Image (cartoon, rainbow, N blue to C red):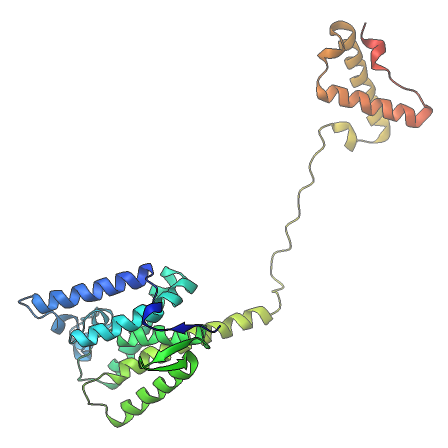
Length: 284
């Protein structure tokens, strides 16, 4: 799929729209409030492990350090998130977004014990990874300047983040959260594709239920399922009753079922000896 994405190609889908609104609203609330919210809602591993602030691995991704931090994350989310949400649907997209954010939090909690972390960067980079895997040949403006296929851009970006995490772990940016979001997105998508491929290749279980058989419809006339001799006797009694009805009330009083029985009797007589039941004889 070859498409060029730039700032004019972002799609405002429901989940992306609400994520932008919620992140922006919380940033304004945090900036204007007398109380500092970030010490409660940022990700700080000692608080999670020792003080049971178990909401922090999720809440941290909805707060940002400064306006530029918020603007960059929301701009990237708007640029590529709509395409991913449009492919997966809002429910799956939102679950994926939060999962990538949790992946970033997990890496920080394991390897960055004494650092406080805020920002949606891990989740947003996970969405960018999903975009690159879903639309590998789409052309985007890398770093808002250079046209580049998404698959090459995300590879370069992942290498750059890994290098920064190795060389400058204390530069004020949580490279581990970024790396965790990227890795979680990659494992989520590739792992899902692998499982789907294995499921298709697996032979059907010998314990699987057999194909459902359609029930045979019972015929309207019970004489059809009986033996020929018994069928003739039942049919004869039905004919006698119908002929008596014609004699008493006329041919027009017959129901569709009774007419069908007479037609069947006429056909059987023709097959046997050429006899014909003529209904006109019974109009009197």
